[in-house]
Image (cartoon, helix red, strand yellow):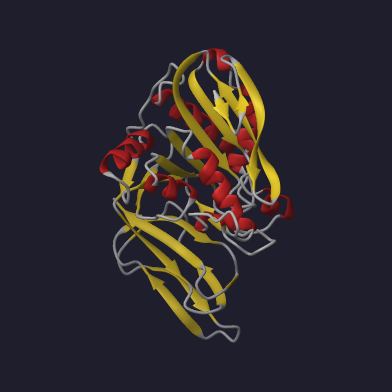
Length: 310
């Protein structure tokens, strides 16, 4: 296996530096199986306060055994170390860029754009499948789910959907996104998923263990490990509504994650400092709450709540 100019021999693991133009390289671990096969990349830490995936990949970097593998795995625990160490919500502090909206990247752009370029340049041409691990940010409560693509070529979408079905999350959500780490990979012909677990700036060992199990399930699905499974209870969300704030204000959610809601039900209220009702969010259809912000204060355009139906 060769990655970023480094050779990893069969049965070995090696920490490798992923170069970033004009910045410090990103650290990733490459595990080369004893037999040739597919290559899986798993990334985490795109947003600095989303911790479950970061901890899961740090642990898997030690626990996975290349001698048990057919194929290769690349683990990148911190795609955005700047935001992680600064505890920055959503963006890279140096330039205010949301890395997950910076694709395609620019080698001559701001730090966030250069990080996006580096990830695209190093990963997409190397891997057969990519999984990007996220959580609800420090201001979000979220129920575990996976976003799978519908905006790529039919074959790429199908491979991603089949892989999503092996995950332990309760919901898989159709996505038309194109400019994220995983969704731009799909546009470049790489099957990919975005997996969400955890939130509110917290992590638990239970969540980390579930995340690790999902990575191993993907490895099994790709034939890298000799194991397989499918989540028969997983439900597909065929339509979702993502509600944003109409103005700066005080947000009061009235529905919890994974709560079943009915059309017309009030899901939350946005008020001014003086108590004026600025926005009342009502469900447009029967469905289930996927995530919502727990922040009391929100800016205009910020995400308030998302819900969908099967």
